[in-house]
Image (cartoon, rainbow, N blue to C red):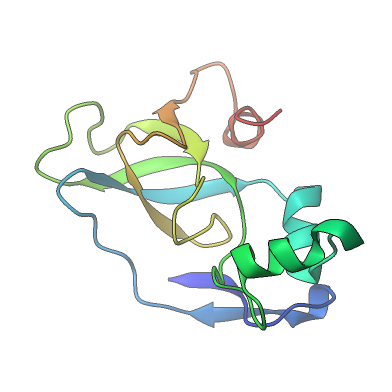
Length: 142
């Protein structure tokens, strides 16, 4: 799969399009083929390490002191379930979904992502039928 990788902090040019192994869902996860993802000011700040001076050190400790811990940015997405783990009950292959990547190891700047069907810090839900993938991707945060 293709993904935009962020191996260092800096301007947009630090993002590199790379070929990565397609993820495999665990028992409680769904594999989503991403059709739309948002680009937010938060993504820009994370990529550039552009944090207010008072929070700079704390933010770098959380997100990566010398280089980003999570090399795939992107927080919101919409797509289609391509596979599901054997303990998944809320979704099936072919479902249109949208959600966030909150506190997951990967982001939505990729062709595929594995999402738990439920977790405390994020959300994945069925996409409203009257919304496009682009519109649904922007819903979680607004």
